[in-house]
Image 1: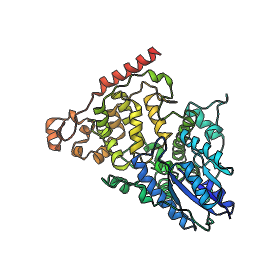
Image 2: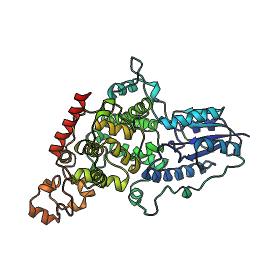
Image 3: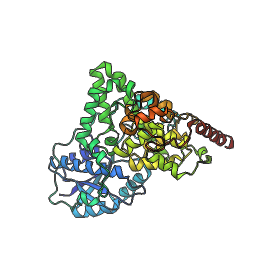
Image 4: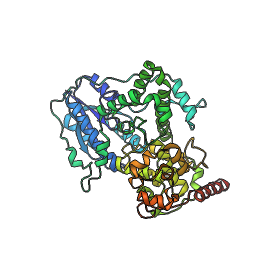
Length: 474
């Protein structure tokens, strides 16, 4: 009997996987296949590789419980699909769609190579072309987009995982995941990732359960405070498809229906899921989103070049405690709180006047949730060059943001232990602390903790002047 290939991508789960479900319903033997395509125009970063290894191992374990297994191959996607198809006499390939330009181009090639090909939506609540303004164009502002998405009604309920998967009479050759060297070894910098995360479908479901039971009711009030656990931390699971947005949506709705006091928190949380949808809407209609300004007038902006400043920012050595704490959280865990992401991005592009692409590239390499849509849309939003961006002249003050969203210094003390003995009132601007206080705390500005690499007030004025010049010159 001919077999079917299910081509796994960023959908590394069995539940609510439309391509897998459709293939299983055919009754034909299934070859689950993941291709590590290193010819991609933009390979995934180091932190994402670490996560990918864990999710692939978890997926293989779940497949084996259902009488199947995951086949791993490395190479150009279209070539590998053709090779595996010949090896097992496959008559069709099934997959779930992706929406960045490179993925879409690859899908177009596969569609011409395979007479029998079937593609599904396994990544979004609503595919980008299915939602338009009343004028028939794509959305460029979030709130109307979100309202239109809500007006479509509830998304379809998630699909159950197949109980069994028909196995072929012979399996194709599979790579060993260790041979892909996705995990770092020399040096092994992933200790913080291992202690923070468990990739895979089961871990994603458990994390969502914990969030819905413990945190969703207060989500709207607490989500901006990085020093407390108040968010779901599902973003890397979403990025790799360990869980689907439909699963999150319906489980959050069910929780809110059973506990009306949680309804406001659930609505606030699902709105963040809406921002993810909006980011993919933007990426689909503007494929250069990770590289070019969505708003072309920003092409005239004069960014600075300062590699030393970029490196200080990357390493959490700017002298601004909240910025440095966030960058060290990122370096250690591969993740950063969303409020902190906005603050560190504003500091790079506005205080330092360095191009948003430099920050987007660093996040792409260091985030376990690096996502082609969310990452680029977030950076462009802060820079002011993106869709529905905050007023381009808004500059986050890293000191007042710190005082407002980490008033007790819990976040700073966790990630900057060298400042831990400072009293709360001096923790946010340690360079201004009296000499005796610094001495008692064991802090030597410029030695144990850096001086600020820039003064925020004149930096803000410089940024506003640069934005004003850009506006005048257009």
